[in-house]
Amino acid sequence: MAQSNPEDGNTFVDLSGMNTSPSHHDNPYNALIEACSSASEIQARYAKHRETRNAAQRQKFTGPNFDGVTVDPVLHKLVNPERYPGFSDTRNCLVFWARPPTAVKGLVAHLQQRLRAVAPNLWLMPLHHLHMTALEITFSLTAAQIDALIAQMAPAIPALTDYTHAHRARLVMPQLSYDTAAIALSFVPAAGEAVPEGRARDEDAYSYHHLRRDLYDLAQGTGVQVASRYVVPSAHLTVARFVGQEDVHVSGGEGEVDRGKVERLVECIEGINAELREAWWPKVGEGEIREGGQWVVGQEKGLDCRKGVLWYGGGETVRLGRGF
Image: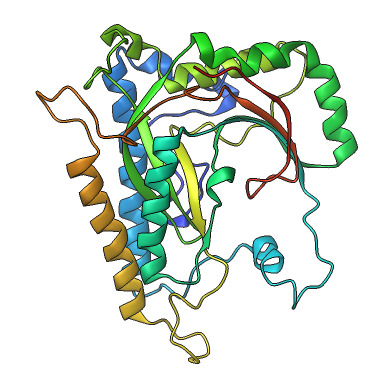
């Protein structure tokens, strides 16, 4: 399979070494599961994906051809209403989100402030909008089209949103992942490390990738065609986006890159990741993980079936599942 260049910043390219093309399976998540014989192997695929991507992005940011970040044009207009009066986002979507528990939100708040210290113009995802896309049904349709899909899926929505109550996939090892458009907090599926009290070690055999597979099957079973872009082995929450060039360009320099600013941003991200590995990752022989360092999906809240204009965390809840 021809691999896309990880430097291109494409969020939807699998860099784990797997071919997860939907054309090879009725359910695209099966490819990785079938190729892995253990939770450790699935974890390794997720880890390889994010490490490969971060390494490529570091090279891109610090390379001689870097000329700036990729500004989200819609968000740029939304955060500058005085320059774009009356502008609104019209892209309607239908998704099932995993909402992070309180401890993970606390960690994100800490990291956002660290990032803002070196990149003061970053747009930060509001904590109450934080989400991880467990399943995307479709994107960029009209409100009427979304409502028609919801009507078709209605009998299955309670089972989908409550699914994590009995199918508890655990995520560990938080790390910042980044590209020229955004910064995210990513996790990898657990593989028996520092199992919390009340949970059996073999429960980690059911991974976040298994959860995504099952949600896909349940959704497809309604007759809806899942148009998800999120098939790659990644479990991430977007925490910040670039909405201008101010944090990487020379002030008043008409597009000239400020290498010092770029270096400080990359060093900040890498420094945070070193601290996360030291303080929030499980350690051999230790039985507990620091609060915020793991996430059992469905903890506190079940899945959030969400519709509407939600690219930046907004939208409307159709049904919120039962948490534990």
